[in-house]
Image (cartoon, rainbow, N blue to C red):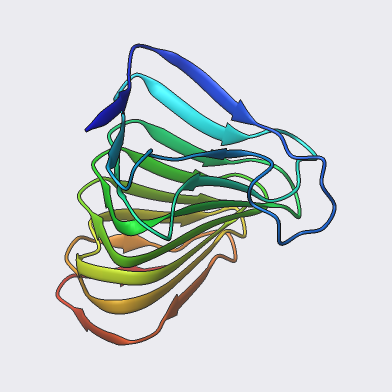
Length: 171
């Protein structure tokens, strides 16, 4: 297990306008291991940054105990791994936070606050989620809405895949 620990902010910047190149700004585990982002760490994309990536889709797992923040308008911060597990906070205040994994597990919090969170591979309970200020939460996988979810301020909730509503979605 590899850990990015302590406290602080890691800001990713990619000036490559290609749009598909993730190699220019990426944090990932080495050797197919597991990378843990500690509870005192925030990983975010820099303002005006092109595509940036946390994790590695080709091998390795990712554990988020800290915060992951998409804050660059019109740009994407991708979070990926064979298994992506969250006990921290995923937040989008601008642009898109794109989570892609064979399995995405959430025991933390989703905050779509004026940005978009797009998830592919969600498994198990959704956990705590909130959509505000025209935010978007777009979910695909096999999952259950297990806690009350407020959707406010013209927010958008899209549910794809196989899902159950075991709680309340309120506007």
